[in-house]
Length: 209
Ligand SMILES: [Zn+2]
Ligand SMILES: [Zn+2]
Image (cartoon, rainbow, N blue to C red; front, side):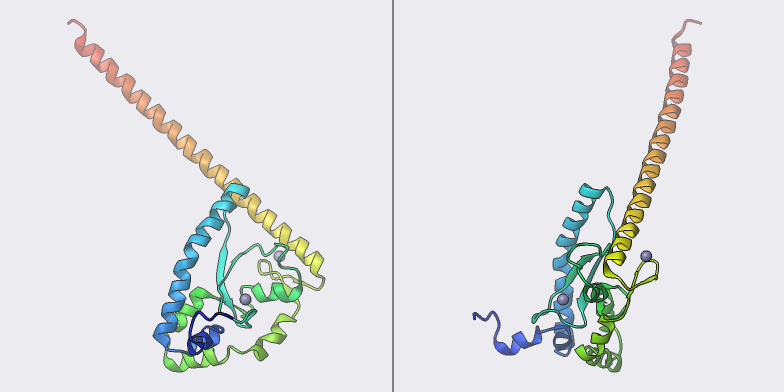
């Protein structure tokens, strides 16, 4: 297998915990770089959302406290959580924004501003044993907090939640566009009135006394 880094360095990038247990400044720099690199991807996803659905919805960036691969990776996930990729309970729970398994990048970055003792404690808590049971807990809708036993029924509920979000966003957008068009109409009418008044004045001043 080709190695991109010497093995010592590779070990640092094994997962979030190994990275954060490394030199704090270097770990932070790595995360900021990941954040920077994700911007283009996020912009592209948002363009696609608008192109295909007429609105954009939240995108989450984060890590799994329970690593899903042998190399640190940042997940970029759209908050509808109804894609076919999310095919079972464990996957859903792994991306729920509040169970604590999915660690939002912006929150992890805040750990660097805390005292050493806090930082060391949260980082040492990043172990598989702690998160395994959370994955198997019953599914709770991250939007309305209702709980669900059956995955297909829950999946249909998530789809309804997103459909509703879309309906609201699109109707709000339409209202805003209508309001903007009305304002433009009013402005045009006002300009028109001013122009007419001006031309009346012009006519008056040019008409013979
Ligand atoms: Zn993962
Ligand atoms: Zn719900």
